[in-house]
Image 1 (cartoon, helix red, strand yellow):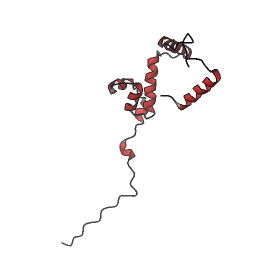
Image 2 (cartoon, helix red, strand yellow; image 1 turned 180 degrees about the horizontal axis):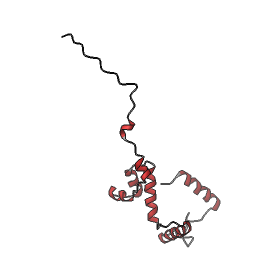
Image 3 (cartoon, helix red, strand yellow; image 1 turned 90 degrees about the vertical axis):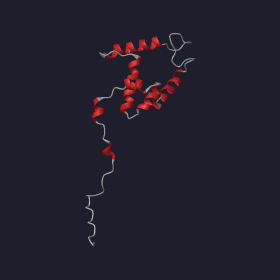
Image 4 (tube, helix red, strand yellow; image 1 turned 45 degrees about the vertical axis):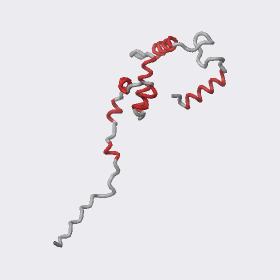
Length: 128
């Protein structure tokens, strides 16, 4: 999933830098980034930001899933985006913020409001 805003930034960077080969090269210009390089970048970012909790590339998947859920994306779509076969696997990623749970709206609140005060039904005629 590539954000249009990110795509615009990447295109501007590409036009300015005109990289040869890989858009994000590894240690060698002719090679791609490795998983070790991504983990090292996470460790460096972790040290710089001073967050006490551990941060790994895998925790970015948790954050991605949580932000999608809080933005209103349905769990099935999140499952497909994360590439999970089982919905149970996706459910482990989802950590719903307390504010999201407390702000959940009842389906009854979505029903249309009556137009006016309820009118009593007229009494049936008593001819018989």
